[in-house]
Image 1 (cartoon, rainbow, N blue to C red):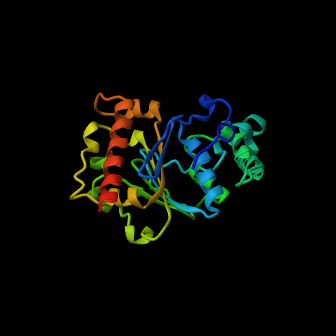
Image 2: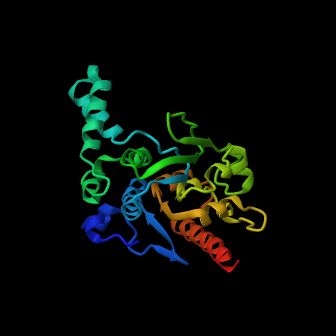
Image 3: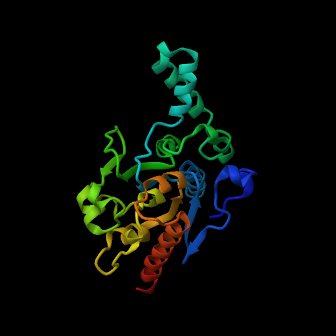
Length: 254
């Protein structure tokens, strides 16, 4: 899968897409600066497959606000605060109605109105996803669709089996699903989070190997604010890619 300049926008600073993403043994890993831009990558995958996938996202934040919510809320409050709820829904519906799932240009045109915590339910609305599993450190939302898993504070940043078991993610439910694995670097608080014993911890490795594609968001502002050890976003990204490479190559050698 390759995404052209036109599909991602003429200005790469606006698209936030890393010009040189990774292909490890045929598995593509795309890196964006701002999380909402994974929508364009998921959209291209949907164009190619014509079928929705299931998302597993690992993030400090839940990132499952409704699409265009903040933009619609600010517009509604500026027009008539007393009709806020009515107008928010109206403006959200209007924006969603302009989107054509198979036309990435229609999505590119409105990326400025989508925040970095609205992309998951935007993807649900577009049909790019059939379901999602959101592992995060802040809130265990309960919506009519999708699943949320709250990481205990003592395990923030962990990729170990104990974390996945404690949050209640059952791999049996997604074992035969076509997955997108999505990771936000602000989830990782210290370098030791990447010290994963692949002989003893297999759940994250299973997710990596099952994923059709992997997307990664840098979210530098949040990363710098949340980290508990003095390491850089560049180091964090490199350590994650190194871990993913180890997992993928180990699977290939089996």
